[in-house]
Length: 324
Image (cartoon, rainbow, N blue to C red; front, side):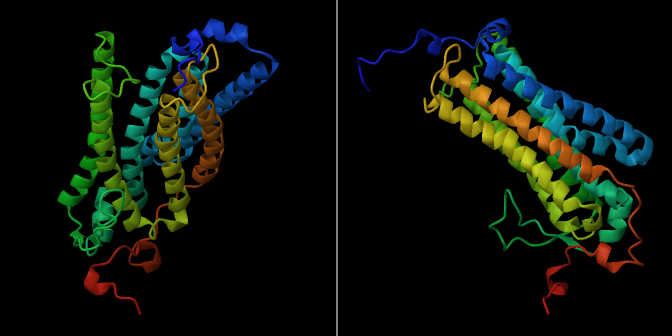
């Protein structure tokens, strides 16, 4: 490293307060912030209108799951907008988005089951079939794993696998805030002796465990729910996951390594957070519009399995699923 290199003092300071951002905005900055704020506001208005539509047109047993799943993109976009305007609150806005999406993971699993008709209908339709558990993100390479019988116990374990993430993410977030107030938690501290790295690793393990049951259920029901556009719905759910978690993590790592240059009043890390939030606002706006098209439909029950074998075809036991 060049010993004569000078570093702007602002590069090592905390993120600026909101009033400093407003006072230092140039014409381009004013336009950019205005457009992104407009996108976040439109996303939330579209979501509110969609909630009203769902409340009036969707059967009661599906309302909660659909509303939660539809809210993933607009909630993350709104939180990113707040973090963009108030950089000092980034930790709290990110935690709010992460907690909401943890609940969405569980609700998407519930949604797929409810689209079939609920627990009883799912067990009745799929009771003669088996679950293929050699799927991502845990066991996609373990093709030797046996198929699992579909029972009340296996269905309960699938739900539990996703529900634990929704519960534990909230608990871990509360714990993180408590540690932060005591000075023991810093999202930028990746030292082994710090609490942040262990909390992040723990959340990562819980996330993988929670995504596994959703992937198992999707692989099992993708044919039965094809007419309900479950594949593009699942793609949107996965896209929100990748953009809100993986994309943000990559940008923050680059900022931590100094790849992203410091631009006063933003330090390298604060600018990384800013770039991530601005990208998320745009991406979540587009996903909100696409999601609205996917869920804006008449919610009719699936045909009875005895009348429509194509719609109820699921993963069969290995001995009955040979390819002609």
